Amino acid sequence: MHKRAFTLIEVVVVIGVMAIISSVMLAHFPRFNKQIAAEREARKLVLALRKAQFYALAVREFNPTFNDDPFCVNPPVRFPGYGLFLSIADQSRYFIYGDVSCSKYYESSPVEEIAEAANFESKISITSIKGFDASICAAGCELDEISVLYVRPGPTTRIRSGGVDYNYAEFVLSSSDGSVQKKIVARFTGQVSVE
Image (cartoon, rainbow, N blue to C red; front, side, top):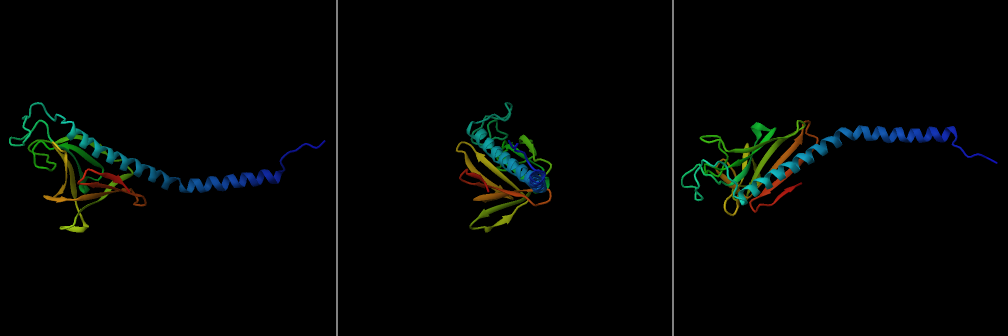
């Protein structure tokens, strides 16, 4: 009767194959980790856009002491449209704001309009903002900042920067070394996607 067992050579081969697979996985782990972080932050940014849209649709109150003026005749208004504001100057965070001044853009004075602020993970930042419009810049204009505002009561979507309205905008999130990028596209129709 023969007992079956592994030979020393078989054990060494299996350990060698496992070592090769482990080293390949470890070599690609940092990039995989950056891809996961960029994907997570892109999804959070899309959720922030949807949250601003929901606030506008739900007619969310910004401040009970402000004027109940649905026509924006006497700002600051109590029930504003809501939007998302991004800036290259502040690459690590973005804001959901209430347009209480009725300017169709984020303003910090005379009334601070920030409803919520969110920070990107330390490994991820916003590195590019582009606005697209066939009559202004069909190939995309590089922008320093942008607002995606959901105006009540529609909500109509206004994508705006520097007093100019765009049909759609692209935001690029990048890892700290630039090796991983995720693009978020927001359109005036309200559609938002991650590419």
